[in-house]
Length: 215
Image (cartoon, rainbow, N blue to C red):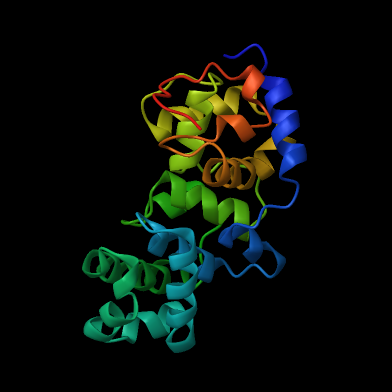
């Protein structure tokens, strides 16, 4: 672990006190099913595109029942621009049917129940728990995996292992905002290729692991 981890966290949490990510904006009026569907649509898609596609879908269908009954071709057409639309359409319909059949139309509030639904992985489950139900867990997406490894906070190969290691060192209070802070930082400054090290508020604490070229 980076010996400056606490300084890094304090600096970044101060820098991003109110993240503008799509999911964080949904916290003001959390609707668990919409958050779940938005997360499934966000896989391998840009945040701004996810927001656009989600809004288009929710104008037509926004409940497990309405998405389940939506013709697959129509669903594919609505979510086409999110990428991998055929696979996502099947996943949305399956998840909606499972919630209707097994959970009486309500998104479950436990990690175990969420993971029992095919199509919902650890990241998606944690996002629902964090952003819909206010539980202090760490959803580890590509930013929350890449950035802590680059900073030397953890040394892991997979998002699942990153989550395990972060849970050992991040306080419960910090867990609640970790995803929001690191997603924003990862998008604006600590980008995958050519990160903005010259603008980075924690550059002096960063070992720049696996950074080939910076700006």
